[in-house]
Length: 632
Image (cartoon, rainbow, N blue to C red; front, side, top):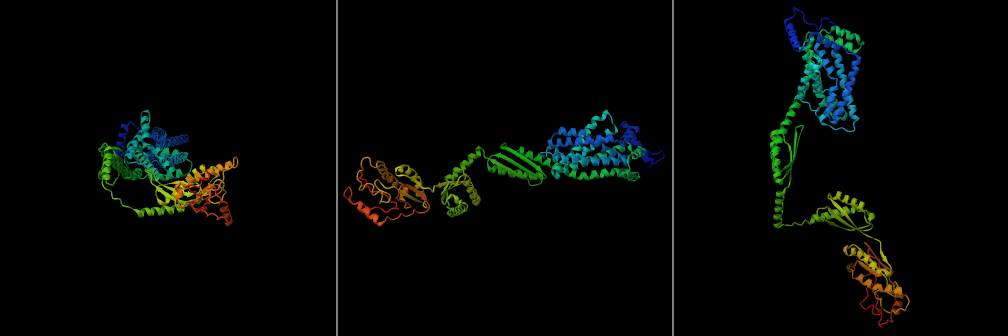
C-alpha cells in the first residue's frame, strides 16, 4: 500500500490543500480534538477482537426481541429500552469513518457487519411475529410505516450527534449518546419490516424499510461530512490496515479490500465516497417528500373539517371523520327533521370539496326530536283528514295467492297428510303469518320453521307458519259415553263447517231395545217397546235412554246443516273427519226389512210404526218430536 496515504500535506504543496487543512485544524481545536485523539479513535475502530463481536451480536438480538414485543404490545417504554440496547449505530458510524478517511478495510468490514445485522434483525422479527397468537397493528407499528421528510430531518440531527459522541468519547457525551440512540431508532423500523413480512402486509414492510433507509443514509452522509470537517482524512491508516489485514485469513475480505484500495487512492476518490450515501439519500428523499405533502394535506383538511363540524348547531350529537389515502368520509348524527339533515349534508359536501379538492363522502342521519315528532304527527293528522282514494289491486292479490299456493304445494311435506287449505294473516308490527290446515299429524316446530324458510326464499318476504292439524283418527265412544264423545265431536265437526273441502262421517248407536241395523235409531227410540221388568237390563236401558238427548244435541250443531256431514247408525258413537266423502251405508236385506215391519206392527199405541229414514244423510237418526211418548 502507499505509505503516504492519509498523511498531512507537505510544505510546498498546493495552497488550497494548506488552506483546507488549516480550516479542519481550527474546527477540531474548537471541539478540543487533538491529532493524537483522532488517530486513537481510528485505531480503536480498526482494532476489533472476536470477543467484541460476540457481545455485539448478543446485544443486537436482545434489542430485536425487546423491540418486536414492545411494538406488538404498543409500549413506547419497551421500545425505548430496545433503542438503548441496540449497538447498530456503531458499525454504521464506522462505515462513515471508513469512507471519510479512505480505509477500504474499515469500510468493508463495517458494511459487512451492517448488512448481516439488517438480515438478522428482519429475519428474527419475522420469525417472532409468526409465533405470536395475535397480529394487531398498534400505534407504535403504524407510526413507523408512514415516514416523511421530517423523519429524514430528524435522522440528520441524530447523525451529527452520533458523530460528536464518536469523536468526543467520555462521560460528558454519555447522555448525548443515549439521546441519539433513542432519536435515530434503527432497530424498531427493522423489526416493523420483519412484522410486515411475518404478517404478509406489504405496505407495513415497505414503509418501515423506507424509514430505515432514510436513517441509514442520513447517518452515513453526515457522519462522513463531520469526520472530514474535523480532519480525520489526515490520519495515516496504512500501518494500521497492514496490521489488521495480517490478522485476517486469506479470503474474500482481503481480496475485496485490496480492490477497493485502488478506487479509494484516486485523486478525487473522496468525492465518490461522499456521493455514494448522497445518492442514496437523494433517492429516498423524493418518496419522503411526497409523503410529507400527503400528511400536510391531511392535517390541513382535517383541521378545516373539524372547524366546520364545531360550527354546526348543538343538535349534532355524534360525528366521525376519516381521512385516509386521499379519501374523506364524514358521518354525523343530528337531532331534527330529515330536510334539515339533507341541507347540512349538502352544505358540508360543498365546503369539504372546496377545501380538499375532491368529492367527499358525507352521511348525515336525522333522529327526530320533539319538534320533528310534533310536525310529523300534524302531517299525519292532516293527511288522515283528507279523503283517501283507495285503489283496489285485485290482480296483485290474485297473483300473490297463486304464488303462495304454488310455493306451498312444492314445499309441503307429504308425511303431514293432505293440505286442506291455508289462510294469510298480517299482524301488527310482525311478519305475515300463513296458517296451514291439514289432515294428519302436527308439523312440529322444526318442520314449520323449514316450511317458513322455503316460503321466504320463494316469495322474498318475511313469512311465519302456524300449524293447524286435524287428526285423521276417529273419535269413538261406547253407548254410555255419549256426552264426553259429543264434546270432542263438536270440535272436530267445527272444521267441517269452516272448510268446504272436508267431510264428517258420524255413527250413532241405536236407541234402547234396538240392535244395530234395525231401522233408524231415532225412529224406534220409543215405538213398540214394553216396560222393562224390574232387574232386567237396567244398565243397557239407561244407556239407551242417553242416545236420544245426545242425538238431539248433535242435531243442533251448526256443522250438521251442511250436506257434507253424514249420520248413520252404528254399534258405537263414532266421528271421523276426512277429505274424502263418507262411504255409503250397506242396504238392509229385503226379508230382514219385512220381518222388522211385521214385528213393529203391534205398536203399544195401536198405531203402525213409521218407516226408517235412509241412513247416510244429514237426517239419518233424527227422531220425530213424539217418538219417545210411548217410552214415557
